Image (cartoon, rainbow, N blue to C red):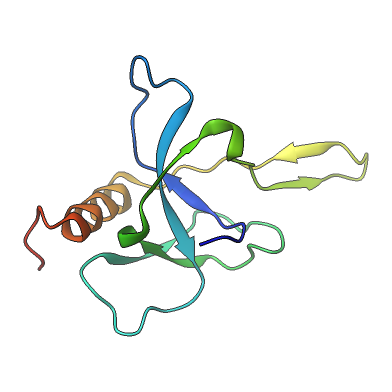
Length: 112
């Protein structure tokens, strides 16, 4: 994946790894076929272009470890033209399902 996309940070902050995080990318395209490492998530609120749409697919088989400096928060500008970052948290059930998808993608979980 080379284009900008939304992602879910799935790693905790680790000592001596402060500048890195592990992410699962989100896609607007339905996987074909849907596998155990795919999870459909509904975002808690709308995000601006080019990421619009509430329904996304977590592609847990495309796990990546990246530097925090490479992450850019989605943002929008108000009438005053001030940039306002959009930070969202997904619910614990969605996070658990994404983590299970990661385990399935890595071959350390049983699908189903």
